Amino acid sequence: MFLGYDKMNNFNRTTWNLTKKIPKGKVTTYKLLAEAAGTKAYRAVGQALNKNPYAPVVPCHRVVDSKGYLHGFAHGLKKKAELLRKEGIKIKNNKIVDFEKVLFRF
DNA sequence: TATTTGACCAAGA
DNA sequence: ATCTTGGCCAAAT
Image 1 (tube, protein in one colour):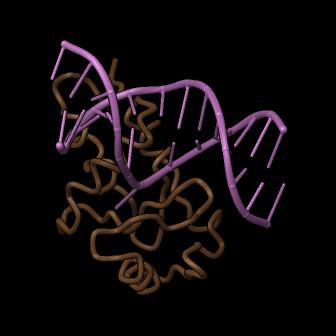
Image 2: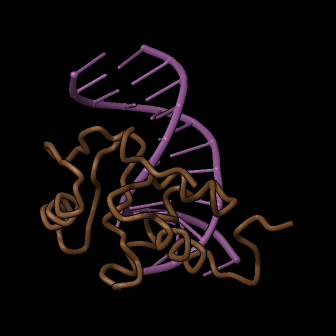
């Protein structure tokens, strides 16, 4: 059965693949990514993203935590917030405003 | 090979 | 509301 993540796909590859699917102007959470990938490695997802910081193919800035708070970013959270703002997402004190509204579910 | 770490999460005190 | 604890899984050391 297709669990999104199996031995043929590396964990990070699956993660990036899903991350790429996030529509512009929306965000998702590490948890949802992990679940969509068929795993519970929430933390590992973050690690995977950290390894591919600024690849144009992986919009890691659209990934936040379950509370809608921004966590690390290779370029700095500040930059991340700016990028999100540019996509129409409002950030306040490192937190996403209307988080539920812009949350993309797989 | 074993231990530690981490861009997490949820529940407890 | 803040702090601590335990759990979770993969990658790094």
